[in-house]
Length: 405
Image (cartoon, rainbow, N blue to C red; front, side, top):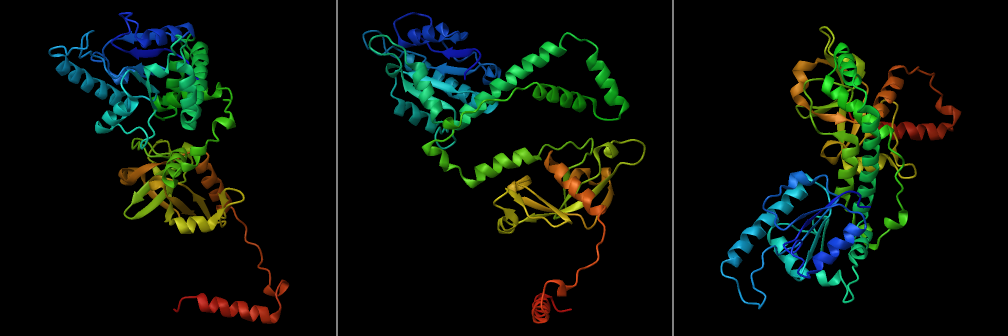
């Protein structure tokens, strides 16, 4: 699962004093892991650690006692400074990267967890990829290193880390194939740049889209084992977390005001709108920079549930609407086709709040296309299916539900 170099930070990593870290490092290197080793954290920046597969660090990087167990003068102040730097480093890594942090120390695990909580690093509550183990638990009295067994046990209880790392490895392999294929040909970047320029679309954006499609086009299927996902504690997923996962799949909240495209999502006043104009027509050629907006009504959770088809995982939709979500605010929206508002893009671009992503925007535009091309059919008489007394009852029910006036 962990493919790539690791980072080891331990004050005993170089001196060969017999500390367990020496055995652990030797064992990892015997498995073929290239390791970058440091005995301090003060010269490291978390944002530069993205290329590592994991970080292994000690909690006490400065000894405060000598070999006889006597306090070393001034060592405690130095230890406090280094500890502050270590905590800041961990926060940077957690903010800028996503990789497991293994804290292997001679300090009791509960003490470390308590200190991390005081520094607002809450492992359990925030589901952070941090494993804390006492070094004595990783090397037996006979010198047998069991670090990988402990890591496997930890990963076995963390389905998200397992899935994300497997996917990351698949992307890394696809990136390598893309680089090998494209790096030796010099002319394609300028050709694609000029093509985008001739088409009046943002060149950088078009280039990034091209490369992204090349990477994922070379990505082989990732093998996910279901027994790694069915865990006793995997049923604790709260509704908000699930909605967050689904909304990011459907909605891009990053706003690009320079250009417009199909699926752009607007909030104008208290109302929401979706641009359903075809992407090729949204390109600014000449003076026509209009957007075609249809209304999107935010649905309550109760209303969305009423339309939800539990057998198929979709929604029951009328021919003049499309239901999509969760989108911004983790809400579901009813996209209505009965009226279209044409606006100049420059007048509404500051109201743009995001974009509905494929294939969900295609679902909307395809249903819209069917709606504007619909053919009226003759109405069937009620008598086709109902008896006269049933028809009178239906008419009475309709009159009772209609608003006066």
